[in-house]
Length: 176
Image: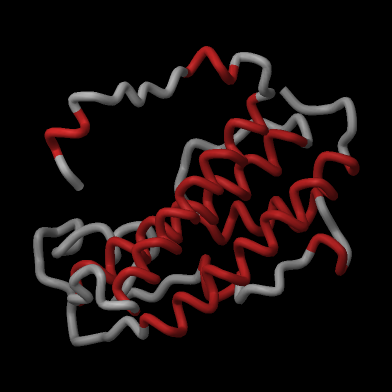
């Protein structure tokens, strides 16, 4: 990117352009933005346009995990339910499944794995930080397979695009 050319351009993005959106629509759009960023990072690493270190991969995973959390919260908000302030995606998925039962509201991406956590790699912590909450390095070793994560991100992009219209119809006229 030519930094000198940037001085010729004005590229503002305004919040007031979105005043007409419902709260649930804001959740959904944020989820999509995070997912798109994860997709672009993974793709850039695979195509060797970006360093593909373990740390870069962790960032792409963290962004993906946050996208899933925001999508679930958006679906909960659209059903006119109070959006939990925690980051416990397994609980969010459980609430989503109660609000949206049936195969049509299922994910083709591996949603259970996307929200699961282990003691060694707690969700919403491991991908974001180099140490655990106690200040200790994460135990053991692990890896992030870029191609597997990339395929999952693509599945979730399709899921988000397919599910959001169904969610809006299921609770039509409901939602903040």
